[in-house]
Every structure is written in C-alpha cells, then in structure tokens.
Image (cartoon, rainbow, N blue to C red):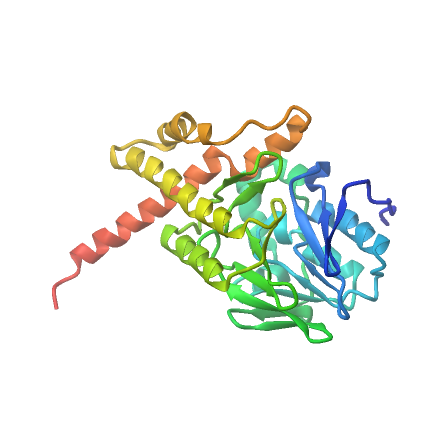
Length: 330
C-alpha cells in the first residue's frame, strides 16, 4: 500500500538558520512531541526520524524542503528507542541512498528489531500500535555503527561528531555540528517543554544510570554548544541554565525515589511521593495546548516511567553493592 503524500501543516517545519530545519514528526498524529532535524547541507542529513507512524510525515516534510527520494545522504538517530528510531527502516526504504547511523550498541536492533519490538509490546500492549507503529528492519549493509569521536560527513567541510552519552540509554550519542556548534542531545538532557520552559528528566528502565547520566551532562557542558537541539522538543539557546537544570532535576527525582526505596516503598509509593513533592516544580501547560499532547508527554516522561527506571537502577546498585560485600578480601 502506498501512502498518499500530504503537504506539511503550518508550524510543522521551522527554519533555524544555517540550512537547519526542525520538523514536527507528529507522533501518533499529535503535534509538539517529537522533533526531527534536517541539515540541508551538500550531503543532506536528518537527525532523528521519530516513530514508524511518523515516517510519511517526515518524508513529506523533506520533499517540501527539496530533499527528494534520491537526495538524502544520511540519517542519524541518537538512540534506538521507538520515538527516535522507530521509523528508521521505513525512512531507509523511502530514501534508498541514505546511510543509517546509530551507536554501535544499537546497530543490531535496527537490522533486526524483533527483540526490541517484543520488549516494547510487553510494556505498551495494544497502545504500541497507536503510539509507535511497527519498526521494520533496516538492511544491515546500510547501517553505520559509531561511537565517540566518529565523524559524519555533511559535505563542504561540514560534519557531525558523535559523542557517546549514556545514562538514559546505553546506546545513546549526542551529535555536534561543526558549522554551528549545535548539540543534538536526544534524551540525554531530558525532555524540554517549549510551552512552559520546563525540563523533565527521562529515566526509563532498563538502562537508566544516574552517574552515567550526570557524566553525559558534564560532557555536554564541556563541549560548550551554542544551542541544544532537543528531540522533545525544539531548539534552545539558553544552554548553560538548561544543562544546570537537567542536573538539578535528576538529583531531585532520584533523591525522592531513593527516600521511598530506602524505607521499603514500592513503585506506587514512590510514584505518589514524586507526584506530591516533585511535579509541583513544573508549570501547567497553557490552555491552548491540546490535552492529547499533554497526555503523550506524560506517557514518555511521566512519574511512573521515570520512577520505574530509577527504582530499577537503585535495585541494580544494591545488588552490585551486596555482591561486592560478599567477595572475599584480597
């Protein structure tokens, strides 16, 4: 079945200067959730593709910007979660010359997403089809695995440099544009709400690790970017304040959950503590923001998902400490 092309709606494409365009990929048909970015360089490159269901939206936006099926040189995903890379296989089919770039720990899951999709269906159930759609395989020869320091050629002396940035996920990279100093942060700095100016952490299971996440934020600060390009959602100029806020938010969430965990609280108890003590830090969405937008943002970075990831990390940390304590001395 061939999907019908549709013209992007007003506001779905935002020019950011230096031939960069933010594209709202309309996750689950809803605006304001997921950003893709086109760098319309000599070798056109897309950073983040969104979900499988978003692939036709992204294709049509690229066509409206003059990037046709044979033109796209590179697609880069910051990590393999379905709201970032779920559409990689479909975009690869739509743009047959594009190389698909991902961190080396995620490459096999793009080639064979069956395990990833199986785990996702266990978590999301029937909601998976509405929220994300079905991820299809990417041909293995078209996948390029990268890690820290690897360079993606954009042509005419311009490039993206990958920086391994775990904490949110073990297969996460940030990307720095050599021409602009922009840093594509994926989910490593959390989820930015342009309507309120708030920043929430993104700490899902199973990979969340506080020390790794803080290390990635220190790395981002040391890079000294000019802008932060959030996958959720949009480009932000206030770099240092937001990176400081990201550290603060991580610590507040983790300490609240740790308090519950240390007193024997379960998931429900920890979630209740977060809702009572933490969520008041965030401004309410303006009335013009659709309820469905707020609901999906809450799904992606809400109390239950974040708390689950933090508890999983605390349990893992305790198990490691217990194992170390049982080891015989020297």
